[in-house]
Length: 201
Image (cartoon, rainbow, N blue to C red; front, side):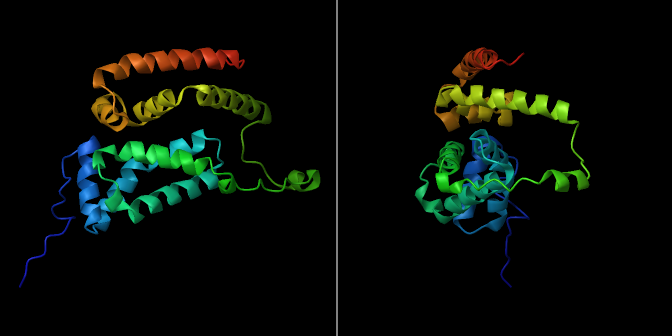
């Protein structure tokens, strides 16, 4: 009887992290390993989601973008020649999909005052929610004013953390030693832009 080795029993990415993990999963996924595909989705969906939301999409449209990006990847696995560049490819593809006009859904029809009065609210107090929404809007406007390299760097370092700076450097194709200083400059610029939008620190 032929012994069958499954990815679950002995996954080739066991113990790997960052770009090494992504590369191993990509190789396995190309061979049809669904466990490897699931691992990639679990590891990198937060990145794709963040890019979609950062482009001003609502939750439902962002979910559509995330699904479209993963479908595009798994439909063209053999065309991504450098698995270590996966994070950068996902950022670029998610940003392109998020900016497609037809991808934005029509806002729902607002409730009439009579209907709204009958619907119990589970949301925060209107005043607090208005302050939070205004602050978040100002922050996103400031963020989207940053150069694209700053946006990508801040997204990746927030999601990956300091321990994964090496992976971030590989994804963005920049020296690892430049990440910290560049990140500080980007954050300083973001703070300046946010204050110019009328925000507070």
